[in-house]
Length: 319
Image 1 (cartoon, one colour):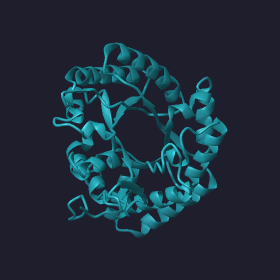
Image 2: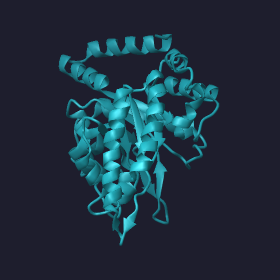
Image 3: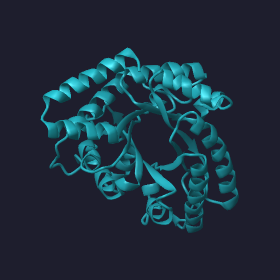
């Protein structure tokens, strides 16, 4: 443990000794269950070489993040020496939560290739210390304006197969939603929830993508969180505002239109354990102009939200 973390934890113990016993216990319980992570795409995608990634995760650690996620392309350089890469992360007092991959599963042949490639990735990512592999998928084909159900069922079958393959490498598979999964009625997400095995496939819930489509259709982000948080292992936390043209734009956490307090409420009220990962994408694939300041604000906001929350009467959406 480095000196900074030693003094932080010593101060936490001292402060907790001044609180009523019930308050200290609740606070420690949340700290053990709910972890705050960072997606590196605030700095741009991909981040290369590996030495640059190590510099950035050092910065994230100093900002107080417990773990980080990154694109698989950022880790390829270290795939032949994953144990060494893991030691580099540990030396910086931060852990790799997961790696983000992308691939289609909508035909059997494509699914076979995607599963083989991602099992290879899962093998070295697990050795780097990760607990999860995240997969995002493409928009599925439509026939006469409706989802192609063959593509839907192939995708859910492929997710189950990939989840089993990833599990054999020591990881959990999380499916990352974009806007497309909420586009239709019934939605692709509804089939993912019904047709995938919850012991093999979890969700990486991107609340910003959900909110963008709540503007015209789709679920309220807080309502979706309340209903499905047991299937969600990782939340991608962001906030969204509207510009003068009514277009959704990223904002600082707490300054936008997503009711973040209500999104995380079921996590704070239960025994849920997992990651709240800040995903401040900036102008993807470019990063923010001042990414350190953006990530500092986000970390401070989430730390305050998770430690001081006592409930809310808000509806979960500021519209």
